[in-house]
Length: 252
Length: 309
Image (cartoon, rainbow over the protein chains, first blue to last red):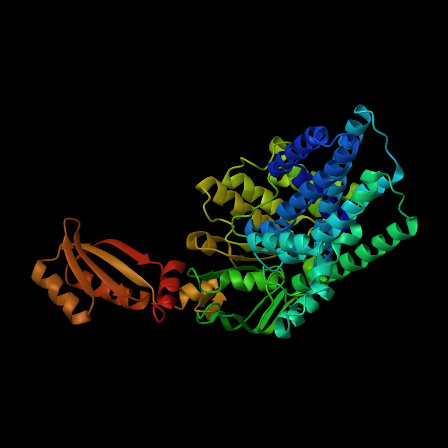
């Protein structure tokens, strides 16, 4: 109940954040203008619209997770609203989980709305939608949950700017982790060890990327989706445990 | 069992980027009895807020212990016993007072009915009903302070910990806070609060502790602290010639000055003043005023600061 109270409050607060509406506006604009790129790809317009729409959902979802997520705990400390909350008879991890779930709820709403906008647009253009399209949107949301957990962890230990840089870097590198494991021979020694280490530590976000399959109407096995969900759930849980531990003894 | 027990408390802030570590609290020990109003005094940076934050679980002590009714201050059980009003309290700006009180009730795990009951009693007491549906954004300092008091009272805690509750308030606001503290005492609560407004502290506290440089410099009942200082008496006299007044002052080693109202003598101690008054009368003087000068808490406070100043 305590977690739910914090989550509902976080959701209400985030919904009032002006950044959200700016990002939603640009997201909707990107989705609706995807037809322009479709025109220069003869016969491929629906495919391009689907691809760009899902990419827009992912990109703007990540920006929301970064801008709001990395501020989530930091803002409470900075604005001192945390003083009267942490002194209540609640566990500190309940606060962290509540904040996280509040933002997760917001991201569900945002990705849901953007997916509906994209779907409606595809149908309006005469295209068809299949299960893979919605699975792709769901896995984008699942990826956002993982990145939000990272943002919350960083928000409890560092400044929003540094946190945002790290989350964005993880987002970029996380979609290309295979590069870190398939290094050319001339990279050796410490650099190779660091990159190989990063390969095992950083989340492989390409596991959540079935956008190409969705755009091309390729069927994705449910077992793969289940595996990606499990992978994200484990990673997210670990990050939230770390965030709770980091916050447990933090002086506020 | 004491309401608050602090024993050999230390807090060290680690150094950053080559700066020296700081020690806002250094071996602090004190107790607060149940149903006592305890004033926690000290200059800015003396360690008051750090101590309060440790009592409220916002900070972890480096060493030493702090407990509420015998329960370790860092535990959930202790937090259930306290209500905390921070200095310049901040709340979610988009919530109304009613929603704010409800939110904190939920954090304490209360049912909807219990939260409604809390709202009724707190809003009645603090006169929050006229602003019940207004958003906290745009609230004046006094309104925020009242709401902060309301939040601290959610759950009807035994021990109220108030950090500078009168800071920045106008005389009406300060009076309201004084009355609230009196009321809490009547209801059997313990009130521990820090303040710079020494006149108010003198009026409402049973005991005070004065913190200097992270350590308790003095503590005791307000009446004891004031009485253990030597009273001074200002005696205004007429009918004496200037040489007579001067020689009387010199012979008794008292301060003397001559003004339009007559000769004014300032004598240390009530007994000495009485004896001196007899000598004045014997010398043909006429007593016009005999005014004991009371020592204020401010005098005591300033005296305690001297070693640190």
